[in-house]
Image 1 (tube, helix red, strand yellow):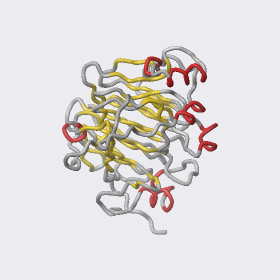
Image 2: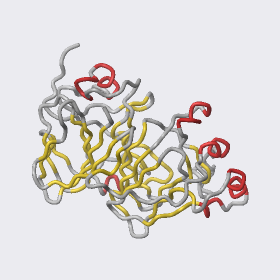
Image 3: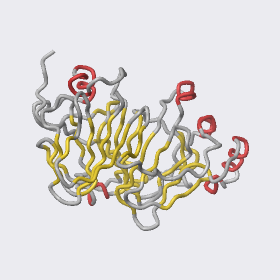
Image 4: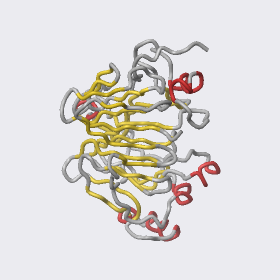
Length: 316
């Protein structure tokens, strides 16, 4: 296996996902070139799944997929990380032009028997319109039977806990947490590599053909943590937002050059505001790059002030 030319960080082509609740703010806020006249709810920025692959945009590795890099060049790109069949994270930008369905993602303990994949995730609020909210956890503890009755009688939306948010807020969502994203939010999402969602209620919404989206109430009832009540936003510990066995997330505000990675470590950078040069790659808000463990260019320097970013990695 030949050694890779890792003179600078890797940038991938985004994959745009049309969603019933999506809009156009990934274009207006972040300069994404969206397909015309479509409601784009998600931009999959870092993904290694059978149905979707991040592809290197340019440079010596142009055209290689994230899966190619993970399978064939893991040590050079990612350093000493745990073995897994695919890169274990999926990173998205989300535009909630309308509120998402009330939903849950399965925990490890039940995902397999339901034919799904476990999903713990993190949200960073990059932009928020006045009055925007996140719906997270239950307003008060309940049990599955009572919760199911509230679905049947149409009162389940009254059971969700709502938090008003602004740009800069963030939320950790362990698998099993009942949740939804409110309208007016533009989020960065870092999650387990999973696309399993069980919907409980979709606000009586119908698609262009007049049909409601599928609900998954039986599965959701097996996944929801009914003791998970009124969780709060993340309270940062210095620059650290999340220190979890699945992923680690920091928020940096930089006014001078700074090393992105240490020896044998990789990191994914998502620029939030300002502008920066990361190892020769120019980044604007909403743009991401992956800094390989053996990259020659590993310093990020602000081009505007203030410049802020998320730094994401996985434990070694």
